[in-house]
Image 1: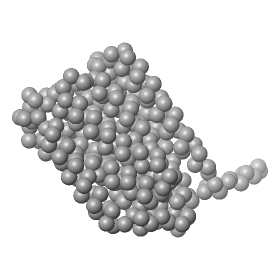
Image 2 (image 1 turned 180 degrees about the vertical axis):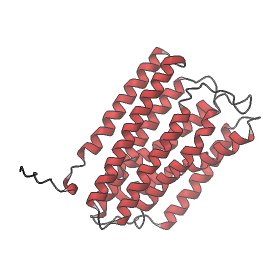
Image 3 (image 1 turned 45 degrees about the horizontal axis):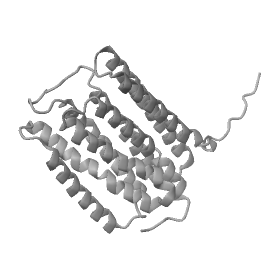
Image 4 (image 1 turned 30 degrees about the horizontal axis):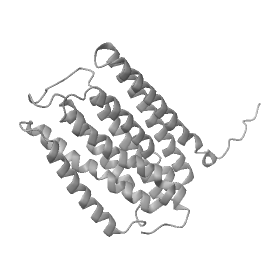
Length: 273
């Protein structure tokens, strides 16, 4: 009877591919978006094809996030915090993916709640993006715990929340349905909190955290584009949809690296700011 060859230890898997795959997916999504944008696709069968391809690439990101989670579990048997960060990160990306499905707007729903906001389906996606980003914020909070002063945390959260509320007040259109206003207003405050998350990552991990910090900042930037030029702005669609999705996809690809960043840093001397 042939003997089974011994398997390498699970924890020895190199995380190099976990970094490379997101960059490959980002390249693919940028080429895809630019191609369909240049072709002027805004509806019909090709819009459905584009939506399917977008969701498939997002699924690739989610799969990579799951691989990262498995690697963290294999290499951090004694670190509950590492596992929790990985769980929150992959779950956050997964819930956001459901919001992306809504935003693809394959049924071509417009003016669903009033005669003011054409792309009102974007408000429906908040039911997924709000908890998704709340999970990602929790992941950053946990990953940087003990490395960033509580004063910096509280101050940056307060400033960002106020800024998000003010920015929303500047784009809200008169006559917008109450449902859209309340849902998107609350989300504007939440997504603004990704900016202090970027600050915490930079303070906690230094230069090694620059890409993940950039991903957090891009999350706010991407949703800022939606509010200014897509949901409450007229005349920019479908170009803004292509531009936003590229920015958003890169943000998600960078954010999903948080568990790797945290796991690799916990064994080093903590930075305390």
